[in-house]
View (cartoon, rainbow, N blue to C red):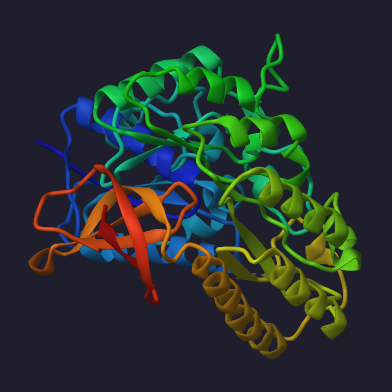
Length: 431
């Protein structure tokens, strides 16, 4: 039987799309290989959100070719959309499927590789059933893609260039997919998209994110619904009220703010201010008990002064996020920011990144301290040290917890008393 290996970089949407491709290949009789085992086919799902992502994507292509010089390498994902010439310059690449062509069928791919010497598909694809998954390899929580693309045009972001405008999945398809996942044992579903808050605005009749959540909440066997990421301007009073009253919607929001300085935010073409974000965080914390906020920050955006960076540090201290994902600025070809002057030196970017990391870790610690001594429910998703029976998982508000038990707790919801903060977890006891 032919073998295939999947390598994925980037966001939850990419991970979802790899799972959809995985299920296609397995249905056609392929055997999946993992680790260092060579495979007949390699499907590499790339990312291009940063310069580092570009480099890592190209590295995976080269490594796959070294692993099996005779293997067929199929490159897809965001890097493949605009950088095909760079990819084709790497030995071993057999086929490029652009992001717009990612929902290929196995027969299309194999047919092109076996019957043609072309390295890039030129024919229009036959229309077929869109992405659909029933499982999620290696995870206790399943990602469910409900939307793709983005209508925003942030100055630094290449994603709209490689994924296009916002496109929503029909609500019926989402519900059917969720039913398959729950039937296969998944108790938590993470709703995923490039711009989640824009869901349904392009449908006729229009739908909303709340409509998706409310439908899923009625599903027997589904205990938790989590939102992957949502823009500040897409969090309205209706969503806050829904989260406050919901028994299943997780009390955690990932809200990218990128900078805490109004001048930088304007240059980034973000549509809010420092004051707006603080006000939003205060409303959320006042109305939704125990809510956690996580966020993204870009360090060293062109024109970011020391004063502007300090405004970002101040914002973090005001918000007390549970986690800050830090991205050193890198030029993305085709974006407005790439053409901007006043680029920040790499030495300064690294220094600011380190300072931001220390402040964000301190704020995360302060946030976690609020929960010591409290009882919370967690979904266990991994076994860190089998010999010590240490099980780990997440609370509704995305705190990573650990508990010792000789009982198999995998994929179980358990009640815990949070006791002691460690670097990676809050150690807890069963209640």
